[in-house]
Length: 60
Image (cartoon, rainbow, N blue to C red; front, side, top):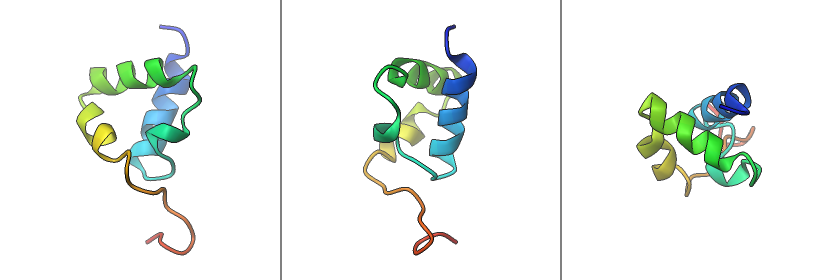
């Protein structure tokens, strides 16, 4: 798969709360979605699209 490593990187960032799926560049979104589906975490990512990424003011 083209962009697999970059897509995996974005999936990890999303799961860590560093960014959201809407922050992913448009061209990479299909790859990120497929990697998330393959890893079984798409439901987690899809549910977190309304959440805001961590910032210094709301980070743990």
